[in-house]
Image 1 (cartoon, rainbow, N blue to C red):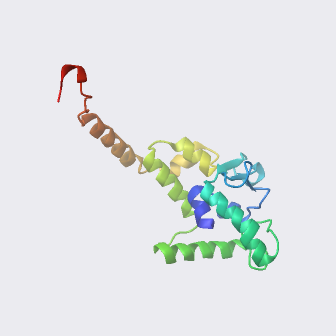
Image 2: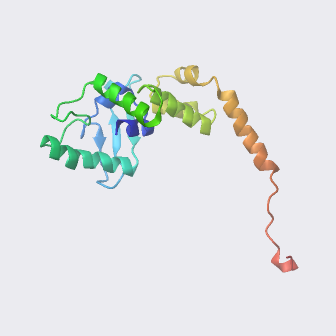
Length: 185
């Protein structure tokens, strides 16, 4: 679940490891609807709260984990997301190693939890060249300068690909609808 959360929500490992049900993870519309992850101001470097909506599939897995799986294993609903089989919160070092080992075993890549933040920025900027403000917001950077310092380098290539795609679309002949009134074939 940590990897799935990282793919949807580019949190810092410290924020991921500290996630608590009812404080950070909420189901405002109930089960079967998107859950929210909300990290209040004191935990975020720029002071702004981070709020992310999780897809229903991940939201349902979190709900099932808390209310069924963990309940059957540790005998109660956990208050924190990442717990050991004894119900104690997992240490950050344990969570970090588990994430790295799982990605290496399943995908064959060495990737740190922090690199998921870089991956999120790259994926978004590849699809939306120049969208630094959106990346700044979802990474929780204080200034746009921080975001562009890390991610502006390859943007000329991204922009070039986007421009080439635009030219390709403009060059494609438009299919004209047949004029049925003129007896066209």
